[in-house]
Length: 255
Image (cartoon, rainbow, N blue to C red):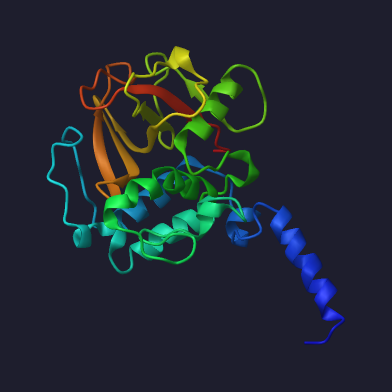
């Protein structure tokens, strides 16, 4: 390589490292189309179909776990897809961006029993938002609590992101919105937000019908899975003995 090219390549690499969207395809980075509910829902449904359209309405932990080699996230064609969730969902240069459904950042296969350390449900949501054209307006993160608390900051009057946290008994989720429950030993409430670092899970609303929402989440049964969630006559989240839903994230789409 000609020596005069080295400074130029180094400068370009430095620019890429400083641009959190350097790795994003132009259609999502520009974006080519407006950031829309239809796009986010279509992308989530596409990924669900890719994983075989699994549905799980059972209480958490009631299903017999699959054998390690039978986990969808570790299957050929799907571990790579989880890797794309990490690569595109995270900002450029993130440590987690090199993970896949069965590899760590060094390309080493981690034991299936350790997959909780590489949980990709937040990466899935980040991927959907990114590919739908959210650009720099969504707080992409490897953990749900980051964007839940960021959304709560918005609903408290602090600008910065196009997502706002709403109480589950006061706002009826729309298509493309996110509903979240805490996975902490002590159940979190909306009034506890922002709550710092905590375990949580969020799914995206893809169908809204009287009495029921269809929501899709990543890393549910080690796959992209659909769940039916009860709602009240007004469309707000109803009491659900399976999941302690405690916040709705209203995504501020362009259309």
